[in-house]
Every structure is written in C-alpha cells, then in structure tokens.
Amino acid sequence: MAQSRLQVFCDRLEQELRPHLDLTSEHPHHPVIVRHCPSPWYCVGTGNYAAVVAHPDFPAWVVKVYAPHREGFAAEVEVYRRLGTHAAFSECYYAKDGILVLRRLHGTTLYDCAHRGIPIPRKVIEDIDQALDYVYAQGLNPHDVHGKNVMLGVDGRGLVVDISDFLKPEPCYAWKDLKRAYYCLYRPLIAGLKLKIPYAFLDHVRTVYRVYRRLGDRLFLKP
Ligand SMILES: Nc1ncnc2c1ncn2[C@@H]1O[C@H](COP(=O)(O)OP(=O)(O)OP(=O)(O)O)[C@@H](O)[C@H]1O
Ligand SMILES: [Mg+2]
Image 1: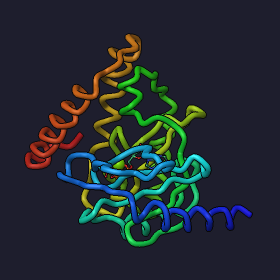
Image 2: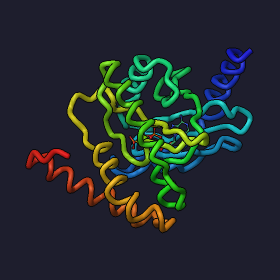
Image 3: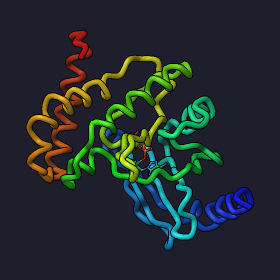
C-alpha cells in the first residue's frame, strides 16, 4: 500500500512538477530562486543548490530538485545509500535526473529558530553530535553542517537535513564552529533574551563567517 502510494507520488511529480517547476541559481553562495512552482505543490525550503518541494496530499515525502547546472545529485544519492536508516536523517526513496524523493523531516532549522526566537535545547546539539559520529562510522565525512542544514525536530530531537556534501574528503569546521557559538554565545547571552534575530543580520553573520573560515583555512586555524 505504502509502496503504491509512493509510486503515485513519483508519477505525479514526474507529470505535474518536473515539467513546470522553474528554478534558477544565480550564485553558488546564495539560495536557489523558485520562479514558478505549480500549485498545489509548494516550496518548503531552498539551499544554494536545490529547492525542496512538498504536496499537501503526501505529507510523508518531499522532493529535492537540483537547480540547472548545480552539481551534487549523484553524490547525495550515494550518501543516502551509505547512511541507511537512522532517526536523525532522512532517507531517499527515488532518485532520477536531478530529483530525489526524501522522507520529510518535520521541524525548524536552527537558522529559523534563531530568527523566530525559538529556544534551542542542548539535547538537539547532543543528538546531532551523535548522528555525526554515526556518519563517521559509515566512512563518510560530515561536511557543511551549518544552521540551515540542521533542525530542531517537532519532538525536540536534533535532525540533520542536508547530507549532500558528506563524500567530500576535506575537513569542514562548520559544525564545530556552530557548536562553539551555541555554547559560548547562544546559551550564556542570547537564549534567555528570546531575541528574534533578523534574517539580514543572520545572513551577514554567515558572510562574515565564510570570510573568517577562508582566512582561517589559509592560516591553518583549527577550531
Ligand atoms: N527531508 C526534508 N524534509 C523537510 N525539509 C527539508 C528536507 N530536506 C531539505 N529540507 C528543507 O529544504 C532546505 C534546503 O534543502 P538542502 O539543505 O538539502 O538544499 P541544498 O541546496 O543542498 O543546501 P546547501 O546550500 O546547504 O548545499 C533545508 O534547509 C530545509 O529547510
Ligand atoms: Mg542545505
């Protein structure tokens, strides 16, 4: 039954979504722009490489669609194959020509939590740490684990929403730096204030962080 429902979902995305969804990616450091999404499909999130779309009649799944000329589809399929089943990650049920069907994760990215003033419990950080230990154990390399790629789940647990770069061999300090910001800045200074941080400020912090990390990598600064 579930299998045939998934089949219906995949058929409908190929007929209704793929031919009409219009995506563009103007810069690899800025989110993809959804120029048109055929109703009732709707966008649940965008990253720098892809848009993620859902359908109201199929709440269990989302469709991740890579923007034209953005690489990473085949690597993401391979990472999902190697990750198998784990509560902190999604799973891939279908993959074809730049489109993946993934289990929908229900929650709020930590980036959106900061914007909306939603408290981020320590347990979320610990869950993600454990999930990343599992990633290492599968011979993969957690990469690009930043605030838009991790979530506070509706059950209060930590989730990793984007695993697409986990085949990259070079070290990535995003999660270690984010964790440091959580323990050194967020918990002592921000959490109690219930601040709602504007997106413009959060994006500015991301840009400054990118420059800091690039410099740090050149100077061999490790967290
Ligand atoms: N399985 C999922 N369930 C629910 N929402 C999701 C799921 N996967 C992704 N999203 C949402 O879509 C957004 C973009 O997805 P994702 O991070 O995978 O794109 P990306 O282009 O690979 O990102 P990046 O810029 O980090 O490389 C996420 O930040 C999240 O809000
Ligand atoms: Mg992402």
